[in-house]
Length: 368
Image 1 (cartoon, one colour):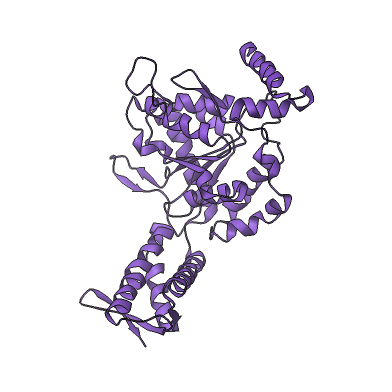
Image 2: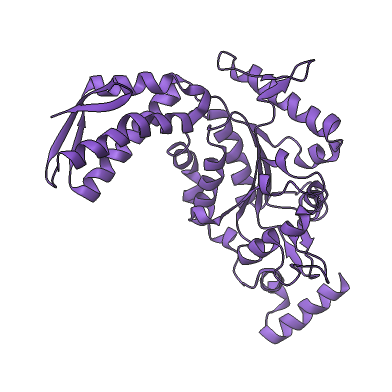
């Protein structure tokens, strides 16, 4: 700490920064910039945040409300005010729930909302960090080891984008040794990499995602569904949280991880029929807009065609939004591309899709 204070003093002198603007000096020392992007977020942007999020995330009312609380707390600079220091990350969230329900999309939406770009969401697929030495890959190898000069993937990314959303996807797939590093990040908001350089996480929101709790094992060790579409959100949420708690306490033996996350668990609901219809309509609108803008062709959907796509989508809800996307690709995009190509439909044309039919396992669009 004395070394850092001395470095700050020298920096202030060299940059002619008045002691009354010590915050600017700290930002320059930690992140290489004088202005803090958190201070530049317009209040009206956060006021309209709920509408912004709901335009991209469908059917997740509970998740939207919880995320908005974290966003407003971060923007108001009230994160961690119950602690003596303010070095903790701007926010910590644990997204749980079924696959394809918008967990990763929510992280990207938050990044866009706060920093104006989906790419300020730095994503790490934790299935790539399953080995015992994976912490070196993430944080950098120590001196004398292979890879020392290149640094760690996490530390390099945060140095480049200290004001960001850091997403650790499918956290349960990471090697247990990595959790030691997470403890330090969540508690102190900083990490020293293999080169001995300190990386700061205090201006980031950290998000973990997980599919824990969706499946469980019976007394014979067989994998079985723990939650299902016919459950209420409350019942499903409780089962998932209980499973996550058991995983960290009993299976992993790391209850301290739960303590660092606190009450910041956000359980995403299944994509239910009303949400599925919204997602389907959004896909259809996107396809219609893109075909019009790129090819100059106007698409019109008859009720029968929409009803067919709706029926297929409702039959694939267990796979969430991705399942609906797969239905759209199979039953609309592929046959539409074939129809436009085979019939050499030109710019300026209007195509009415009257129905979707299947013959000999091949999907056709009945158009005019």
